[in-house]
Image (cartoon, rainbow, N blue to C red; front, side, top):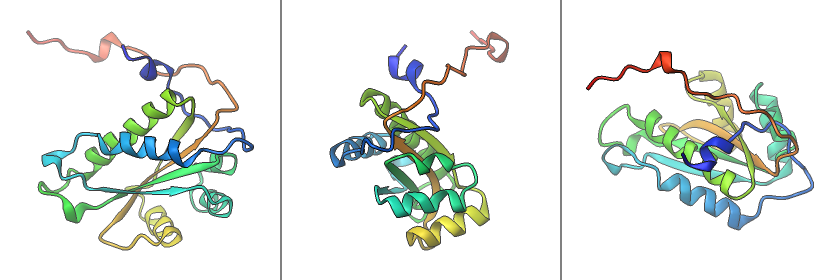
Length: 167
């Protein structure tokens, strides 16, 4: 199994003194854009945020994004459903892009925390307003990024009872 999968954790405390570089953000975004999407429509856009004032505003809107107060970057994943070929696949496509960011961050020695925005109407409206995301585009997720300042235990595990083999 891929080591990044085993090592990935949701980080909620970052070292605020260590910035995420532009090159690191570009690597994360390249990983995101290598994700599969239905009909290769790629119904996503991304906003890379390193501005401290903007990072501090996120938790005022999103109650579960308080880790942005110590993160030195965030990536806002924006769904662009108007670009889809097959309707209603943007949640899967954008989620695949998010997962690629999370795994690439591990490879770069960075930590992340995925905070969902979609489908919460109020959060979508408020994050949209904060970052100038106008419909039909949809704020999908916020990913806090930074150098981890904690080492949480692994939470995921294999559960045989949730698997059916047919063969």
